[in-house]
Image (tube, rainbow, N blue to C red; front, side, top):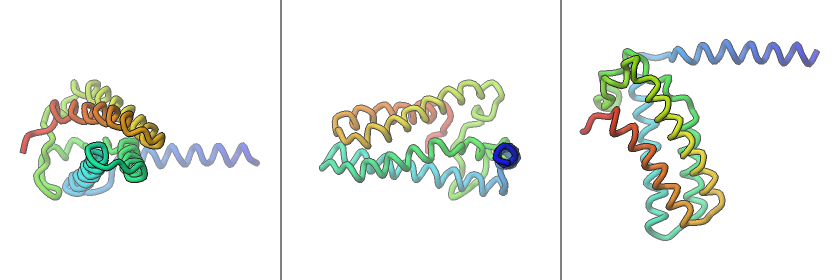
Length: 156
């Protein structure tokens, strides 16, 4: 009985994952959703920065780091469908056309993987509460963000 339930759950998860890979929504919705996620990341980064440059509050840093970790692990790459390279969400998208070229896929994977790694580490370091370690990890996380911005984001 248990094995059958496990198999059913695994199959359902596989079907659900496949369905989620084909994101629902119009291109402008997908652009808006990813812009919202990036604004949330920016706000969370600003919260950490304010704490490492001012009065340090472990709880605020941990909360912000946990948000960053959650978004980084959310598989939001699914919001970069081929039909979302131009257009408007909350504002005009800033993703460069190079992002959608097949030859960029491997590099994007490496950049995204590095970002997820640093985001996960940020959450661990923040939970430990050492302000100096948080500041050092914050720099690594910022560099991981910048790697994608430099290559695949248009300037405003």
